[in-house]
Image 1: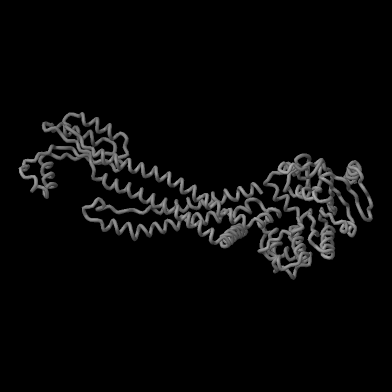
Image 2: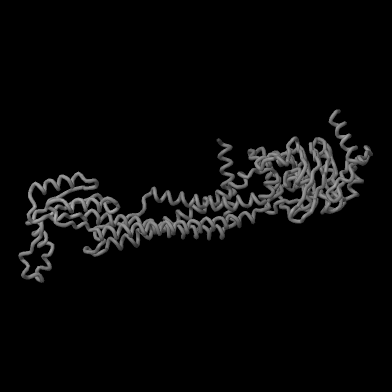
Length: 304
Length: 245
């Protein structure tokens, strides 16, 4: 155990000594990895908050089944019961005609001055169906609406389709472009780490050659370079996360908190990626560093 | 200890034949000179022994291991049994003499205390104790070669390969280095020393393997033995006789 710890310490010592000698190159690589992860992290945070924003609104958007003026009580209770058994339906509320009119009048109170002569405003009775937060991703939502729009007593349906479809497309687009950006950034980061490690290798060529001459295994030669890659990758990712958190805390959050009460952002609290996602990003950074270093040192050991 | 059977080595890039159907045998504990003009194949011969080159044809056996069939992952373990010194020393300029020598034992991942003890022993053996903390650039050529020798023997190898170890040294320094190598040989290490310095062969006579354009053109023992293997058959008969002893 003691010997194993000694070995690990010796590998870390060699990796840190290499990084110290290649100070500027190692620092620049760390900065590039940081920028890559900053862009990626910003994208993840943005995507996460857009999703949350839509969910926030989705909680208030309902599918409304407007009922015929001559709908019977039994038709209403049949519909209520049937809709209540549908997947993702959270609540079905019957809004009688009087209540619908009262609500409409209340909602339009400020504009009533302009609506002179419309005191006899009419509104149909309806069934308001509140759906689960992921309803906009449900592929069978449309078929459900079509089925019930033909049901006896139903006049028309307002599903807020355009709203949810547009946001669903936006989210899908965001994630798809995010994946493309992530792949591009990660390849760039791997390439840059590989080049930095290659610089270190060139500088230590004599040392590596001597080690191999006296019987060093490939693992013995490789390990410090892999550690160097892992350190640069994970530190870059961690620095990006820290910077992103500061941006979030001191710029984004105050901006949203101070949004006007009537704005779309009202009542919406932006979220920073969870600790698990943050750890995953640092781990991913370490992985990128590892692969970058592996490419360089592997190629060197193969050709020499 | 070292056997070459009909070894040929071609370099595709330069279309040269570095070794051409070479057969010879170096016995355990022997000290052998490998000589011949530049381009004779001496360095290729040595590089093949520590598996830095693979034969194009034929077999190279080192301590019972067939180099041609050696897996890449086994090469480090072969090399731990072989010390190598070069004309240009190949010391690491950023490391002290002690650290250069210790490198051999670091790769064996020995405990630090053991490394320190063995490095001191090896430096004592080559008379470099006092210079343990010096950097290579602070040393004379002879001292650098002594440090390189210490690095080669600190792992207690069975074989020591020396590629023109006196090539950069004046006659007095060369004499000192050869005396050290002979001393190492006396302790049981098999030595193959490549040189094209006739004065060295005359002053410290031993068996001489002569190459020319990759071919074996002579294999004779100088000095008290005064034996000459004029043909390959003579040599093979002799090696058989040795085996049957």
